[in-house]
Length: 220
Image 1 (cartoon, rainbow, N blue to C red):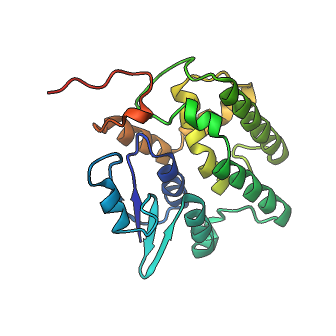
Image 2 (image 1 turned 180 degrees about the vertical axis):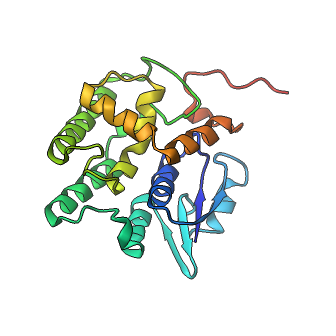
């Protein structure tokens, strides 16, 4: 099984299935295709008809799109319990995940994922703040119902889907209610998340669109 991803520093979409695989303890090979390079699109098209990452390749099966990959993993590895066992909770987890997958454009645009960056107070546009309030509402309701430490008690796809939001909140030092701040700390402390953040911080590529508050590195 191979997962094709983009830059760990920037690729929020890649983080989701990578984290799901890692926390579930599934062995996989990783292929990284840096974003925004002259050959990026061609390299992505070679592994996916969509020409985007992430892409999961499992023998003769190719799955693209982060949520579709996570759904495939839940079916492929049922013992990992990547969705809640209870039908009602599973439905809620899917709804929460789908809302993240299709929404929150204000937050995405104003606060790009950047593991190595620290931009406290930046990006607090009205649209981003409205999205943050909605995220906190979702997290608070789920954590209150499950008792934590993850959204549905144990780690699920819902947590994987919101891991890039956690990263954005850390980068931009977003003020959060205590319960949400504790959840951010919980996700950040996952060994897989620690490893991803360290690898992202060590990358040298620079994608201008995802570095709105920093000067580019000096030419050698």
